[in-house]
Amino acid sequence: MKREREKHITRLHIILFALVVIGVTTTLIIINVKKNQKLARYTKLENDLKTATVYYVENNNIIVEKGTRRIIKMKTITDSGYLQDEMTKDCEGYTIINNARVLDGKYELGFDPYIKCGDSYKTNGFEEDITE
Image (cartoon, rainbow, N blue to C red; front, side):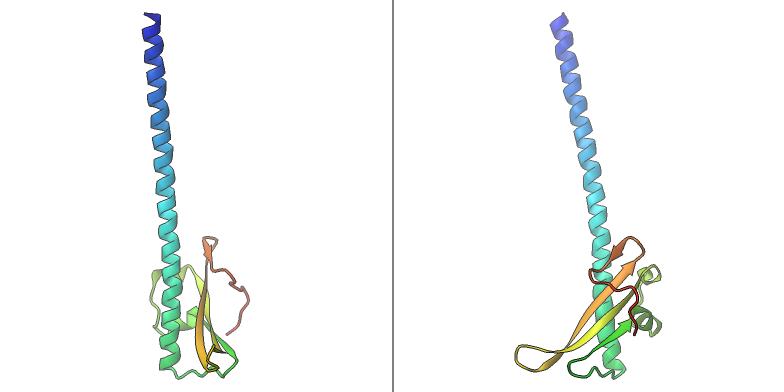
């Protein structure tokens, strides 16, 4: 009778342990999925800022001389109507436009977006006090 009780307690412990492991694993998976969704949302905002800046530069005939760079703030892009995203209310940012020489010796515009959204996200290389 004692052995049956010990087997029953052991099975109960195994079941409880398995439930705890499943619960912890599920919680970690949910947290990771939410984190990845947020990261994807910030990446999308960076890409949208880049695209909006390209349109802004083209439509406003902005010239970036060969071998130079220009900075366009996200506020300029949003105020001009080129970027409409709710996240821009909680974020600041800019795009650096470089007119750099590429491999074949020609010059080409490169657009590098940078955003900072409170303490939640910041693009690597984001500079706090950058001017347009």
